Image (cartoon, rainbow, N blue to C red):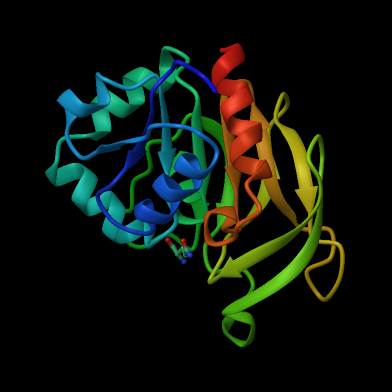
Length: 198
Ligand code: GLN
């Protein structure tokens, strides 16, 4: 249990599931929709959902500048799926004009696994966590990473074998699957440990 407050960006997507996962491991999460709510948290989760919708809602809510500033100041951030896209510096197959918070020097490919695999589960070996089941829904993968980005997990079977699905750089953690849709809380615990040591 940390005395730090973890926020969940609640503009769009499965933020309720992230909040429930955090509660299940003894945290007291706060939903973040506006800049003044961001000021009250020590860390932020950016949920899965639809990155194009999240981009537009974040622009309307004037969240881009405050989030980017906090990221630059070292706030721990954990993004899942669309949240990973929002953390990436570059997107392949972005919508026209699509913007991200950025901060993580990676290139992600949206909807990378293709239509025939819209939703699937895959066993993953996650560095520092262990074996887990990754739930993927129209997921991105990480096309490439710059120096200093640690690759934490890759797909281990099927046509996408070897593709990067979890990365970390410093206080930024991003995964292309959805631990918040499972009752395996180890990835959330991993993030809480990052927040504690930040
Ligand atoms: N394909 C979605 C996007 O581009 C992400 C899907 C998800 O978060 N489950 O944002």
